[in-house]
Amino acid sequence: MASLEKSAARTADKTVDKTADTAHRDCADCPIRHRAVCARCEPDELDRLDEIKYYRSFEAGQTVIWSGDPMDFVASVVSGIATLTQTMEDGRTQMVGLLLPSDFVGRPGRDRAAYDVVATTDIVMCCFRRKPFEQMMARTPHIAQRLLEMTLDELDAAREWMLVLGRKTAREKIASLLAIIGRRDAALHMDGRSGPLTFDLPLTREAMADYLGLTLETVSRQVSALKRDGVIVLEGKRRILVPDMNRLLEEAGDDSDGGMLF
Amino acid sequence: MASLEKSAARTADKTVDKTADTAHRDCADCPIRHRAVCARCEPDELDRLDEIKYYRSFEAGQTVIWSGDPMDFVASVVSGIATLTQTMEDGRTQMVGLLLPSDFVGRPGRDRAAYDVVATTDIVMCCFRRKPFEQMMARTPHIAQRLLEMTLDELDAAREWMLVLGRKTAREKIASLLAIIGRRDAALHMDGRSGPLTFDLPLTREAMADYLGLTLETVSRQVSALKRDGVIVLEGKRRILVPDMNRLLEEAGDDSDGGMLF
DNA sequence: GAACGTCCTTGACCCAGATCAACCACGGAA
DNA sequence: TTCCGTGGTTGATCTGGGTCAAGGACGTTC
Image (cartoon, rainbow over all chains, first blue to last red):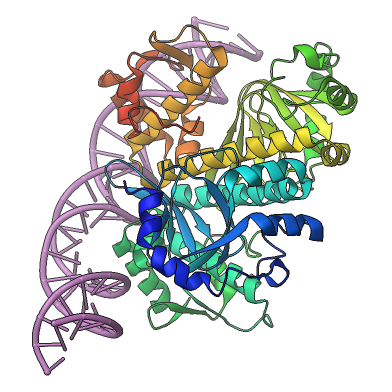
């Protein structure tokens, strides 16, 4: 039940430290410029956004926002990874979203957070105070249009995840998660395709379990099984090599071409 | 793999029959006027929508759209209930959305259906050809604003459903579904509150199973168990009476107040 | 009114994944 | 160098819900 204020206070010193190298960042060379909620903005619109934006940093493991707490800002993830989770009174938790760079946090028009947001890695967020952002959104169709597009994408992703949660086996769930992270990572780096895919797994076994509706033991066992069967190769605990993406997609129970949605 | 055209052809006769009593309906006395995607439109905007709209009817059990088929229209559900489902190659299916009156079908900018849409009851839809609708959306912020709001609501609902699918027991899943349908039904009728809630269950046991990631046998057993324990009373197979909503919410594992999202 | 199809219920059994528990690997602090 | 704390693995056992199978309650058709 710690409040946003408390968690912000706890991290104040670090925030100030890191602010030094991010506070004056120019939108023009922002790494998420072309994918975030501001992607469609014209230069003059960007200037106005620039005036109301500020950066905040969080360390791996910190809670950015607690569900139910007042939420007076919205934000884009600039770098790092965060999770959106829901918790039942008895402590059962389910991750309902994975926030990667360019993803949007918060809902215009809503003044309280609906989910816990937790930084999985060190993270930098580009924040806007909610009220000014809402006013600007009303005057700037480019922002609302982009936000609609992003929200529809998230809805598709959530629905794909409902199939995973409701109907897939533990092995298929793990394969699905690895395929998604691998694909997003590949899209991000845009490196010369076709070689075997390698990427860092940014989640602990427990976080994977929360995402997949499993226990961490089952996650561990199924990762070991996929390794044993040659579907993936582990380099340490967190680095994954996928020799054959189609094989992985097969194990995920997906269409061979991986779906046409994205 | 039946195409949209085929399913439309199959139903053409009935469509024409029913069109008689819906084709000239005026937006002004439309039952979903204040909740659908057109809710915020001014009279002149409504007039323009009126020009490009047309009604289509489907009978219970008919497939409205097949996943992957070309989709040249978007639509609002006027009356009746439809489902959005995803299917794996081996036949496993997961419902990913329940479409009630005023809900929106289709995605502007996407030319193929991402999910199967099936009419659960007889249904009437208010359709717009996609291209004109997209053009109109670009010129009419009121439509885009409302669609954003509705999409954000759907995303919240999908995320709540992820918790149900990932972490709840079979009994909790059934109780959650009954609570949601009961609440939506109560909101629709807006009758004098506080008495014991009664409503029709618009889904077969199989559809409930598809929604909840269960088998129909488990659904049947858990419905019987909730009845045996006095949480619900069955009047026939499909009519549900809830003597104590708080008790039902408790069984669903929800906060006693039922959540503050809606 | 018999025969069918659809939807639903109930029972017997089984298994995937949860639970409980022990232990390993690594990194940072004393 | 040992001591912990965190994250991960693996084994033994249990169980919720799946699977397979039989049968009941209807409405509809001929």
